[in-house]
Image 1 (cartoon, protein in one colour):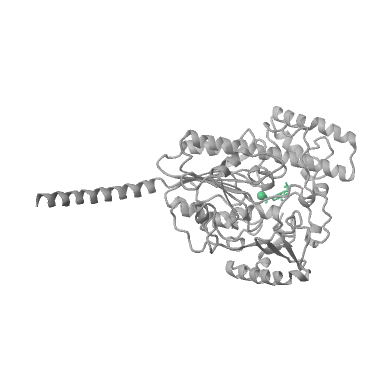
Image 2: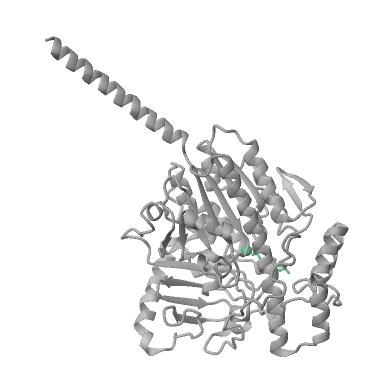
Length: 528
Ligand code: SGN
Ligand code: CA
């Protein structure tokens, strides 16, 4: 009898202990929802990130994130341009549904966004840096953003509605403001921070610490730099993105003693005037000797184009180097504060960019360099180190992914898919993962003259339709022709590939609710 009682008591005790442990586990899970830092640059591309095999630069701090977690080698955007990409990320919806088809449109901040959902679920939220959506940020406890594109040197920031000027370099300042906010945050709550750099956007003005980087070095030039667009359509032939033809001497190429030839050049001279005497002296001196040698050499033709490429690429990479250093500051801060383990970090860009491929700078096209974007994620507590995945992902997936990690229900009307199942399964895509991505670009007529187009990409093929003032189709075999130099649309041997892709394209348009009618909603007169 006594023995039985002892056994029953022991069982009851075990049960109580079990219940207690379960409730502890639950509350520690709630208490340990991940902190999230979403770092995004403007126009950074995988050709300039060493984790993606760059042969022209090193990005040790971005690579720290990649090495600590997962690298997405097939990450795409849905519309390769700034404001639209940002609106897609915030809403998890394509441009035709979130209302930002092009850079001229204003984001309706009253709509559902994932930062608002995180805020509602008890996250402290902040947005620092480039915003570019015209309306004030919503869903953030703290925001401090650049007006419009922002300036590289001594920029204004709008802090919670109040415009203030700051002395310094924009990439350093953006990081300072983000770290200041982290220092001030409430320790008991998880945080969500959007840290959005202006760099390396045009006109690629390097910061004081990187003005001399790559001096006396020659950066390798892409082998299709002198592309003549043979075997391609009208869109590639009529764009205005050519390094050799479109770049402005003072503004883009920093030939600071050249006679200004246009408004942008005048603007650049005004930017120099806004610098402190020390900043101005360092900036002008950094280019002085090379500019003198350039005037003397009187280069023409291909030699002149190559010189322009060197000037462009070095300034671009100098801007990237500053971003990389500043990402290092953020990672070091997290380590010092003991936050590394429970913080999920995303590093990405608003889209890719041309670094001389096809002779171009800028983005917009559905061709690989601007359609792909870098994306690496680390979260030591739950994602293994050193992973890569070839799963086809989109910036549309960011909202559902971060919501799922935060334990917040993903609204049904979001169009992306959470990447958690890929990241937590060693980079393997689930058997029902998407095998194609859909794209739609609208900003035409407009700066850089890239015609409107939409298309579909699978792991091997890409089909694009350029429309509006033309009606042309392009088909690329990415395995045989990764640089997209030969349009196969008329090639009979690809007839069945073409019809399969056409069908897939129409199905995706139906799935996402996009249609050719969406083109008519663009008021082209407002596009800058
Ligand atoms: C500006 C730039 C363009 C650039 C767009 C959009 N011209 O108009 O080169 O494509 O921004 O960039 S500039 O003369 O003003 O520098 S985006 O990243 O914001 O979409
Ligand atoms: Ca951009």
